[in-house]
Image 1: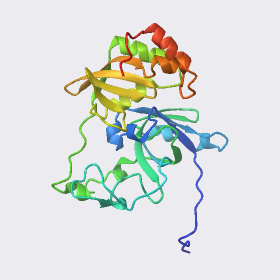
Image 2 (image 1 turned 180 degrees about the horizontal axis):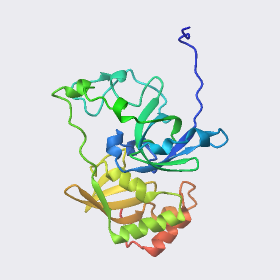
Image 3 (image 1 turned 30 degrees about the vertical axis):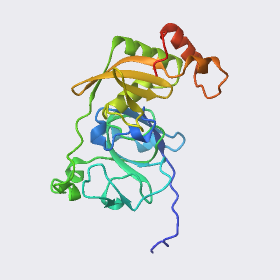
Image 4 (image 1 turned 180 degrees about the vertical axis):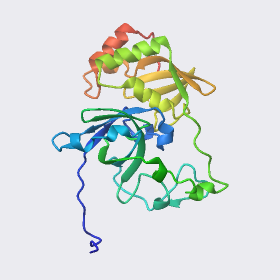
Amino acid sequence: MNMPAAASLTLHPIGHVRTGLATRVEAPRQPRAARGLAGRIELLPGHHYEHAILDLDAWRYLWVLFWFDRNAAWRPKVLPPRSRSGRKGVFATRAPHRPNPLGLSVVRLERIEGLTLHVRDVDMLDGTPVFDLKPYVAYTDAIADAGSGWLDEASAVADPAAAWSVEWSPLAAEQAAWIEARTALPLAERAMATLALGPEPHPYRRIRRSEDGGLLAVKAWRLRFVVTGRRVCIETVHCGYRAAQLASADSRVVDREAHLEFRAHWPEPVDRR
């Protein structure tokens, strides 16, 4: 019996993704671009999922069915990053702006602890609702002659370049660890995930040029970096608030005490923003 077009279906998340990716601009476009990025899938208690995941640790890769919960609307035609021949119908792409914003990704399973799955190659944002998990079965899921559709067009852009290498100076690593110990911000993970996509100026990734290299903004912190070849070195971390803001009663200042302590520990002769 066919269901009326206007009928609705009710889905309930079985858990949520936990990663250092907080915004859409930080997320890799495909799992392959997320190679190595760590995350967790935390299943909800009280639903007998501890029985549902029995034998799952025998599989190396998993399909994750999830919800693009940051998207409020869909688009019938989209312009994929690799298209050079105009917009495509959304069903001919992997774009997240879909009538039902369902996502499908493959992750690498490392281990299971209770109701927590530790995974890698994660391209999903922190808090993403998960609807289902299935094993990736190589002999049936990998189809050698599947083809590449419009990606075979001569005008299509080649596969995205490999991730940039991101390193920390001893000072920047010390500063990032200090900040993480005093705030709830996973600064190092977010910075590395963003800069691994490329250090070029980008308004949504909050990257801009500075007089001595580049500047990445993560929340109210500023990370200065230099680029050599395809290597990005984060040299220093700075407070993103001006001294006058920290001294004021401005309610928009977040983690005021941490920023004041940071400035006292690593004083700056001038405001360099």
